[in-house]
Length: 109
Image 1 (cartoon, rainbow, N blue to C red):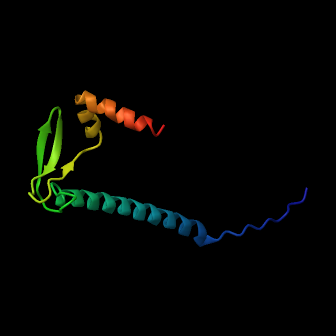
Image 2 (cartoon, rainbow, N blue to C red):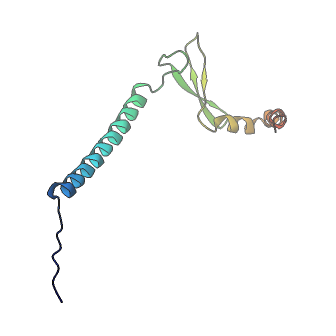
Image 3 (spheres, one colour):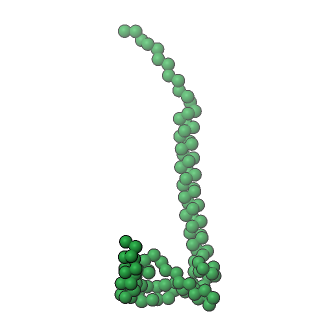
């Protein structure tokens, strides 16, 4: 049996460069996610109790049955802000409105 020479070319920088590139990409992705989270949190804090309609910091929480609704107390605005699901809760409390809503929406089915 004769020994056959096999030559393997190993590029020294390829694996290391790839590893460090992946590590840098992970760090950048993590930093971007953190910045997005912080900026969203900061934005929410800065705009808390601001009316989406008139832009003033004039929202007051008012109880309407079992639901707490945010209402703009600016006399020139008066917009109502409903959180997700609050409209359905109000309509459920007002049985007649729920029947009307179902009748109207049944037209589109």
